Image 1: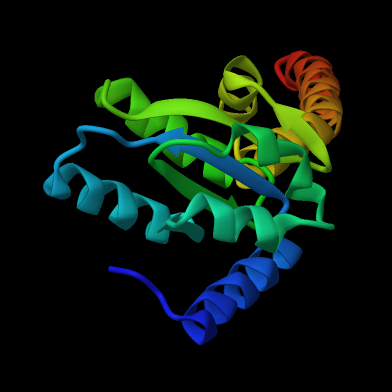
Image 2: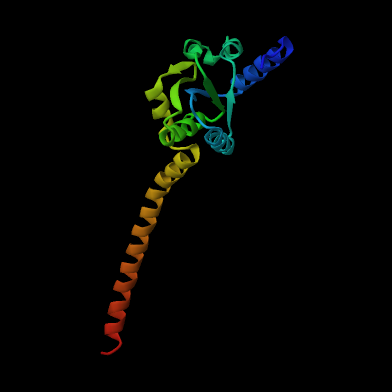
Length: 174
């Protein structure tokens, strides 16, 4: 179904706004995917705050002109699904995980911080742990020296406490 001029302008404005808020864009070819599989992909994307859209390539080219995602304009051919995310890795993670289980979804590339990403770069970006996991790992690293010090001090206190009690017990029977 063809869009009239005002509808096209609305789509371009929406995608431009989305691109301005997003850090990452991943592009994948969806040829041959069933509606049920596409629905599952959309549900997973929504859970991760990733915007997933099937759009006309010419409208996306116009929308990303002048943004950090302009570098992928050359890759925008064929039936593509576009995923945008404010989180640096969420879009790549959602698309890459779905592509592992569905061979009909073929990652074509993407963009992050004004740099074009090839398929391997998108997969590498998807393999980075989430922000929450990285923060938990950092907290664990920061707590490790403190907890080790506390354990050593507790062991020293226990040894000194045990050493002080032993002579006192020997002195009582005599």
